[in-house]
Amino acid sequence: MNNIDNLHSLLEGGLTDAEEKNLYAELSSDSILRGEMRNILALNESVSSNRTMFLTSPSSKAAIFSSIGLTAGAVAPSLFSRIVSSKIFLSIASSILTTIAIFSIFNFGSSEETVLSNENQTPNYVKETIELALLPEQNFEENSDIVAYRSFANTSFAKPVSFANTLQGSGNQNGNQVQGNTIADKFDNVDYVSESKNITLNLAPKLNYTDNLGTLSARSYSFENTSFENQNNGYSKNEFSQLKSRFSLEWNTSESVHFPEERITPSQFATFHNNSISLLYDVNSRLTIGANARQETFYLVYKGIANNNLSTIYEQQPNLSSFSGLLRYDLFEVNKNMPYELETFTELQLGGNTLGPVGRIGIGLEFRPVRNITFVVAGQYSQLRFWHQNNGFQSEKFSLNYGVRFGF
Amino acid sequence: MSKAFKSYTDAELINLLSDRKKESAAFSEIFERYKSLTSAYSKLYVKDHDAAEDIFQESFIRLYKTLKKKKDPQNIPGLLITICRNLSYNLKRDTKIKVAPEDVSLISEDGINFENKELLELVLMAVEFLDEKYRRAFMLREFDGYQHKEIAKVEDITIGNAKLRVRRAKQKIIEILQPYIKDLEKS
Image (cartoon, rainbow over all chains, first blue to last red; front, side, top):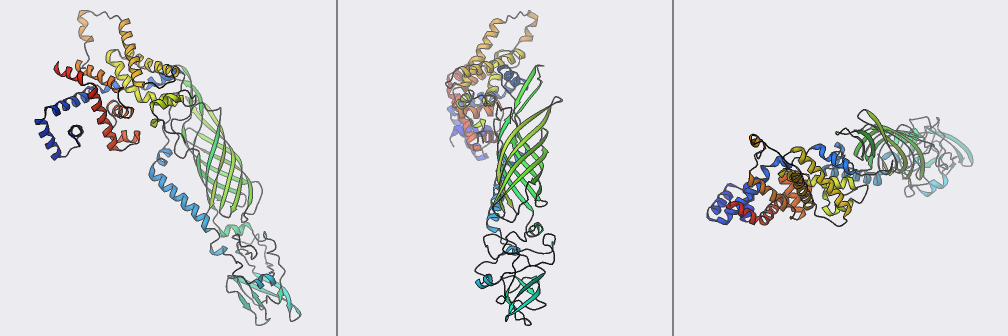
């Protein structure tokens, strides 16, 4: 650091004792350095002793902008945007979202309850010769004790497995027509042989049943298949709800059109502008509730009396953090366990931000390419109600929202 | 997401004045950058607070009209000081003060050392000759009272860089004012 920089550091209190001592020694012997010191002191003194001259009146800006027909309003960044603009929060949020995305992509269908019987595990002859008849004692749609159905045919999807409390079947044994019942209660080894009826039934791994009457031979019996030919059979919503969490996280971004058309924009858009995140809970197969947090702007046009008693029209587009409760209803009932399903929904959101209440209504589509990931697109109308000088005003916009929903 | 207006250069802000959607925000940023400089200059020679306020406001109004008319980039602080100085001279020229001898003490200098005031005016004028990044750092530090870490945050630089820019600005001002400072030392 040269001596000039040392002079500045001395005046700012940034030198150690040893450095100060050296600098004073230099000053005592260097007249040019002393002259520089006087110049810096004079400059600092001329400004700092007249600091009040630099102060401006808050109403000055409004008066200037009013004269030239511009809007001076500027809204301080919201608490939410100040929080999320911090680098620590951004790092944490991106880590969480990445983790959720990776978990959802690579972990679907791996839970114990949804392990598939695949072609490698299931002997071909089982598929060829067994047409399992699962004739439940009770209606699966209503029986919440039954675990799930399993499909041998298609291994592409995580289809849950269920087995009836009682299996009934008929077939030929040594040329005789045989009928029997068996009770399935838990998963176990593949083969089961009945001593009494010499029936062997080879099934996929994790499927087992005890047979009070005897085993059923795969080679001997043919079972009426009421379950697996129809891939939709057995996918009751109760089963679905038992097998996976009903919670999901949805992230959306949006493009908005304001009414009236915006004439000004914020000097700086908040971080996560036009992004929202929702925590959703599937109450049943058609109804979903949740909570939504969104960073957005509304274009405000309102009238008031300014400080100079002039009637003034204000125009602003502040950054706002809005929080809402939401209700989503599927217009048509579909099987949520099936992939490639396209669902149509309507949505209602009620909430608010620092300016006032916000209501939204929308209609959208969901497309589920794989089980725990859903792509969402929706059109949405939003209205903000706000007040200025005891007069109420409203701001409206139409948004196209699109995003991804991750199931837990 | 839009670039923050604080990071725009003066020339970029002037260009944005032709965009109807962004001109309010752009001129707002220009106002925030140079309000302290203009306020100090308007009060240098106009004692009356209301008159100084009028000159301050009129300076920015005329600045806006000038920037809208002329498309090429302008030296904003230079323009402001010129406008402000001319308005001050016009006001003094048009104002005739009749003072009774016994009231002389009421209109005496209000505590501002003459040399200090003159140096302040020179400093304000020298500011326009600084490179933009040094000028902004100097004004934030000396006119608006920002700490170095606050300057670093506004300008998106390190604290060390903020300190360096303020120092370089002061050195440049001293260099510009060298002949005048010598005269002041002699008097």
